[in-house]
Length: 305
Image 1 (cartoon, rainbow, N blue to C red):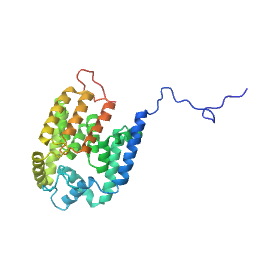
Image 2 (tube, rainbow, N blue to C red; image 1 turned 180 degrees about the horizontal axis):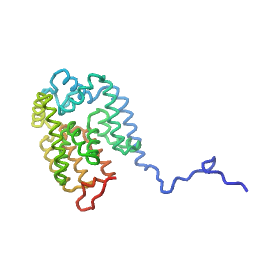
Image 3 (spheres, one colour; image 1 turned 30 degrees about the vertical axis):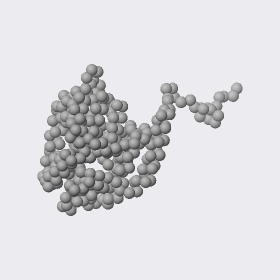
Image 4 (cartoon, rainbow, N blue to C red; image 1 turned 45 degrees about the horizontal axis):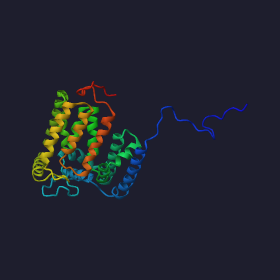
């Protein structure tokens, strides 16, 4: 009697494990679209510099004792720096040892890595995320929104410490303190507020003039233009963000976290289309459970695994 051919031999198909399901057709289509967009971005935009050179140029000016801000520049002027001085101060020492091209390559790898991590380290999901046009645009211009999105997730899932660098890049994540207060997490809110104040105090001590210029530019811009493709003054967007954050904090759970991400997005001082890539933070927040210290109202608390 002839023995049956071994599994895996020619002419015999191995059955997939029980319960195994391949990628959904929707995911495959989105991943294909994202792959095309990524290829276009990589070949047409990455050979040139992007928004990352605004950070690098500011750090170089800081080292040279030059002003960080140009109050007369247009809000969308190439390489214009509109961020808090902290980011330029952190990068300043590296301008003495790294070439600007090296920084651009490193920053590009960083934001691509952010997409991969936010997608759960799944290549197909990451490519599908690129099909979300704000993400593709962010990869094209290479701003800091994807980094902020990852920091928000880390702040909600790992430690309150990550709120500090997030707010140092974009002011809107500072709403995280208000969210923690509304959620009744007063200890975390106090820690973020104290640590953030300490960072600002140290930054001010190192470059007081830069902070004076930043406050002047920020308040002037907020009063004169919205820095957005939608004609809504920043003051109204910020107020809307505050209201959403308070409601989200009181709601708690995943729904509250989604509300927080939405609030931070619309309260972003400059709200161009690529700024909506911050919404990518919602993906891992929905996929993982809130920390034990953040129970949802109306449903049992869950512990992060």
